[in-house]
Length: 441
Ligand code: S3P
Image 1 (spheres, rainbow, N blue to C red):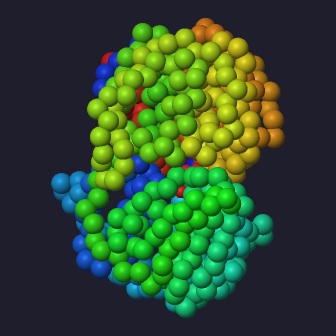
Image 2 (image 1 turned 180 degrees about the vertical axis):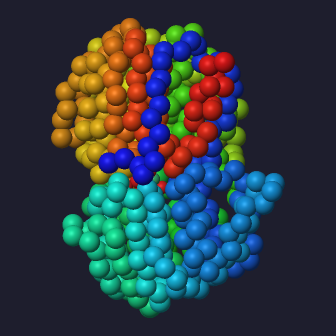
Image 3 (image 1 turned 60 degrees about the vertical axis):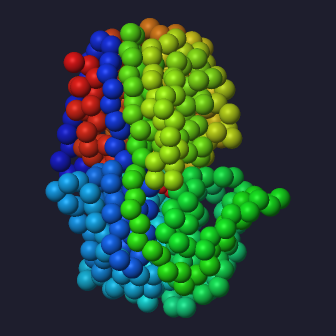
């Protein structure tokens, strides 16, 4: 699986990484900022939006359904919403590119509107399971016709009024939770999601900020999130904090490249997103939090990361939901640690932009790393800080996080590492390679 115009890149070992950088806006928050603004009545302003391909796919979809979504010359995005219930029938199919978040959340929105929408995507997205959202949204009354295996392309015929449900999440997925809550926004009565294992809570925080009636209660079954439907959302001024998943690449890069000292500014520290920080600290990483503050209803901090010898750990499986996107870069850290790191209980990695267990096992093995593949993770025996052999050509499989993780591995490889296609990096971190160059000047 590669891009129509693959862009190969070769990385060689580099000297220390030094300097202060800011990471782009958080991807999850950026998607939600556009969607919720597009459902409010009036003008919302969004600062610090991630301008990656995935978020731009969400912006284009909301425009196709009637909202005005524009970027000003000042870098601030202005969105005029259509109001909950006001989405219009788009003229053509919505192309979601590589973005699972756009697809699953928008399926939820469409499910409770009187419109019919066809969703398409690239080869990676078209191989990902949508059954997990089709099931609850069908129970709410939407009619969904999917390609074999519950995949894209698929068509959602929304139902008005939709039927409120109480739905217990069978997988720990913020996308499924959000899809049901977004359908609940335009459904009469109360829609409930029961979440046995907590996942990122940006939808809950932001929906409340927009004025939705949403409560979260603890119960023996887990968190119960209730949303009162036929909501009216008030326009907001939003500041998007920096993406902790993007920061993860620099946290690991600075930890493993000798003599590095990097400060990453404005990183979202929402506790449902900080699993990698916890795991790296368990491994002995030297990461200091500076200037903790609040931005846009989220805790943020600057993180100072200095090179440190890492030791192997058994990654606690309960950390998985709070670091689900960070396993590929954690595997690179493990490859440089002393001893064998065991990371299991992360079966969900098999259904991300690529099968991240198989893709990282193949990539790291090609670069000379000793590892064992499990159905739900990897065991990786690290070099204890010595360079990786490298000298490999890596398949990034249309997966931005594989491309960036293996680029970081290339920084500590004895022989250069070539990535067959780095173009997917534009989905979440368009300036990744420019930032790498700036840090190694
Ligand atoms: C996301 C949720 C996670 C994560 C994805 C973004 C979100 O997916 O992997 O990158 O914004 O809700 P799952 O819900 O499939 O775990």
